[in-house]
Length: 112
Length: 113
Figure (spheres, each protein chain N blue to C red):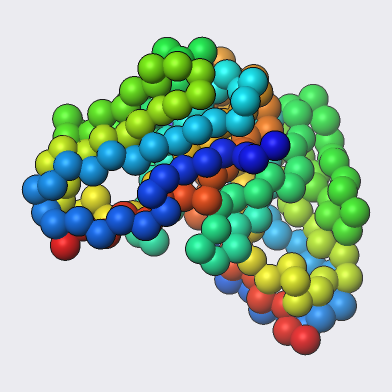
């Protein structure tokens, strides 16, 4: 059974700091991995999608990497801003089923 | 595009009542998902439709829960009878092709008292 873990559960950093969020999964037979952002009281917004054949994806200050063999992904946020404060979730899509399995998220607070 | 539209946004109901949650996916998307989010269990996939056909309902907690997708632009999730432990945020999401970027609605916040 695929399990997705995100550590840490919560993170507080000063504005301007570069930071890394971690996601690990137990079964490497994935179709892709997505990172999402969730603001309080809102739905999830997809940030980056990495196909299983890719190593990384970039969008603005965000960079996500994928190491399928070790079952790990990281989300790098450069020059963090208070507006980045949110919960970040990763989800893997299982090959053959296309089911998205979510981690429990990292709650990020960027202090001004 | 209006995105995934869910209704109601908030519902408070008494135990034993029937609850119907509604979802309109993004036009042209052929995959639709219902998720439930709680503090204790995080995001759980309840059911997944592809081309209006239920593909995987293994996440539906019990027979009190049912979901339908009568056409490509509408789906419902029904709880009958509702119980306090059903209190959660229920999200509907859609994607153009299963396995691609998934778009979430704003959620339906359900409280059963």
